[in-house]
Length: 277
Image (cartoon, rainbow, N blue to C red):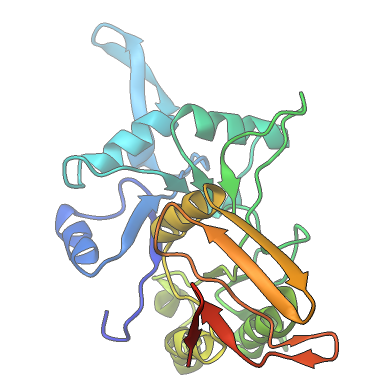
């Protein structure tokens, strides 16, 4: 909040108090589920058996972990997004997407490179809908992340290297125009305490602004995607004039117009026949 930014926090359902959640929500943080399928957390197991004899345990399923987190959140809050803890993805690629969709999860961000790697592991930084084995689209949008904590291995040590994040952002501005999803774990300073790591986290927001990137959280980004999907845009050249018609259901969309077209430079912009200075 102090740096004028927001983000999404994916939280394992038993790892935070109501007071902690209230503070995060008051600062405009988007709180979502970090689905834990690792079977390492004893607080995510329930007892099963017959009557009072319950000698066995089983891991809470996705629905139970969602409900466990919702119990600490304000009434009416929706869990719409997910990232799997430790990036665990069981079964074939469609199984997890099907489970997420069955529990009203609209967005996932589990795909991406683990430490110390970075970049376009799945070939894109743009959001996409997975295709099921039957050829139909699974309506859960996947947004791959591109870097986790900015850590690299040098001299057999894990150290922060912020230049790769800067390159991803500047390449997005100049070449690829991607959605830049970066992960900073909130317990990073406990795992690998470093002034460089802390400064890198703080400075990445400024660098994104300098490169004309919209800084947002996934709840707002999901709203933007829905708005864009309901909108249409058409363009055509008439001599040296480029006409663009945008039909939007919301007023939160913007149009980027190229400064150059072939050998011609943009001379004037008109909106509804009125010149824009």
